[in-house]
Amino acid sequence: MLFNSQGRLQDRRPLSIIDIGSNSIRLVVYEGLARSPTVLFNEKMLAGLGRGIVSTGKLDPEGVARSMEEFRRFRALSDQAGAEHMYVLATAAAREAINGPDFIHRAEEVLKTEIRVLSGRQEAHYSALGVISGFHPANGIAGDLGGGSLELIDIDGEAIGDGITLPLGGLRLQDMAKNSLVQAQKIARQELARAKLLRGGQGRTFYAVGGTWRNLARLHMEMNNYPLGVMHHYEISADSAQTFLKQVARGEVEKVRGIEGVSKNRRSLLPYGALVLQEIMTAMQPSRIVVSAQGVREGFLYSLLDAVEQKADPLISAAEELALLRSRSVHHAHDLVEWTGKAFKAFGIDETEDEARYRHAACLLADIGWRAHPEYRGKQSLNIIAHASFIGVDHPGRAYLALTNAYRHDGVFNELVAPEIKALAPPRLLERARVLAAMMRVVYLLTAAMPGIMPRLKWESRANGVLALVLPASLSDLYGERPAGRLAQLARVTNRRLVLAVEGGQSVSVK
Image (cartoon, rainbow, N blue to C red):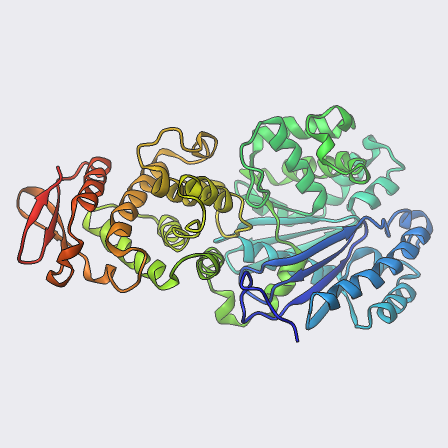
């Protein structure tokens, strides 16, 4: 019998995916099938199966031999992790090589399971689903650059539009151009001229999927001293991208700051990825480039969910899981979501759809650091939240979530709190993070993080613009100096006249 630790969700059954690409082969074992899947184990090898396929028509012999050995290891690791299902996906190199069918047959014998050899259309479809699953919502053109091919597809919300597969994967382009970057640019331009759908992307977002583009984004982060090393939803403006891509496309990647963070096996493909992205930008004229950590694997998992699960908010789902695993009471977290929603209305604080989502998630995450030493709860919580593998949230949204928790523990007027994270959030989100944290600091002193109390605390409008936080008579013993002091902090943050009151009894003005 497999015994899960309390650090894992008890209702999940692990599953694994092996992704056989033209350059890399990766095993990912997931905790279970979920809207926001959590990785239990992740390992890759750079097999280079597609190297030389243009000239030989065959998979690289050395890559094939190394892959078979790795498949044995991947099968054993998947079994060891208790994966109840293994899904194996193969893409461009395996479907196009002359010896592809033989390779697949041998791999199936080693892995002891069927391999799905995806067509170009299927690969583009799953890649699109990966982007759809990771953004709230997605609107633009997704481009998945692998070792053998480039899939482009139009996405608008949950709708998947036109798509095309082009032979512009890094290994293939390098082979076709015979290691000439000048020739590679000509080939990329010619091939992308066939992608008519790019014309419909003007002024919209280009979603960059795939290891080569993620590594380019990592370099861009290093060059710009970006304070948050989270790849998903990292944004690059069109102007900044052009200057950066020109530098990489010259082929002098060893001189680029941060190159040591990219494996040597991947460095040679960076100029080709930069060239392709340059030509896409010329043809599409996007407003920005956004990196997606979600691709074919995640899209395939998303396709296995039912319609109700697919519509769930991935950020809220992930925050709910962390609350369940780390907070003193997940029911208290739910109380906090409802209570702060009513409090925002009572204070006349408007929220956009995303701001309401972020407040919801911040409330679910408010208590995840309670086991830490009191002096470090804010820092620990901020670090966990800022760097969590969340999807469905941009980087300013991450800053809102992390800073709310930090202010809740370290004080809403503490200007020393995470200046590098504060730099990511616009003034409006910073203000709301302080307000939400100030509300949390009041209510935690009245509830001791236990459920069922918050629904009984109400805001009442009184004369002369005064707003009263009213405790029922049955909770009058909770009335005291400490909550009144915290309410005074909330009054300062919101510039409101507030009163702490007991129903039918005493009250004290805090401003």
